[in-house]
Image (cartoon, rainbow, N blue to C red; front, top):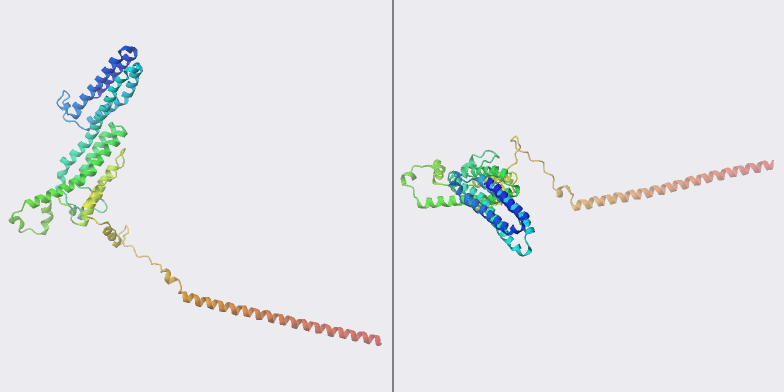
Length: 385
């Protein structure tokens, strides 16, 4: 396939160069180029999508993802050079003959349709593996029993979901090397969309099929008698898959699907896909989110060493800390009364201080008067002498 594509490119360049050197041959070169492009496209479609390579001289055992990826690369190469070939031929054609290039536009659309079918084939491969190769594993799955043997916080997927994730990762390992980044993102967005819709559908179909078998097939009385409750789970596994009945089993089923989707979104080079399979199963299993939150609140928090966390002392309510309004008024009244008494004492002290000052001044004035009088008497005595 790859060598055929390279040979096609060589023939195309020969015709383009002939048209450039011999302008009268341009119309003939356009028809030859169109014929070569259509031949390569039809043969590639017949050998790969039509599985003709299995019966051809190549004698391939099967057409796998690697062959499809190589075809995608070849078609992408031809599509990338088609605009340049058209421009080179247009430069050699007169204006009246531009309509001859419409044939190249039709060929480009045919190549795009072929490429779309090849990209969709990758989705068909994964879908076929899941539906026909992995779906029978669902009958051996019992999520109620798996919830009882849960290993702490580690969630291990059942064989069906594990097979879906493993085959998708193998496909990614092959295509990541061969496909360009834009084609890789496109392919795995389609694969994730298909897985998102097919996984819940297969679980529901398995449950419906097992319920129909139970209603149509009645076990003989010898098998119904003498069996205790210990063999109920074994009988259930033998009868086929049924949706989980207990709340832990329902949550286990949703958590395993969620674990699978997280692993797929971690693949390098792919777009993160918002899977809706969990919400579909959540609705189908009739799980109530409000009850789940109430159960989580009732569970006492546990430390890493297994000891229960002691309740922290609760703060007193604000109403208890704040005094009663009547008590506030009494305190304020007492403060006002004490302030008034303090003011009155200060006024009395000021008055006493003023009276004392006046008394001292009076005494000083009396003393001065008596001294003046004695001095006058002394002067008068001297004069008399």
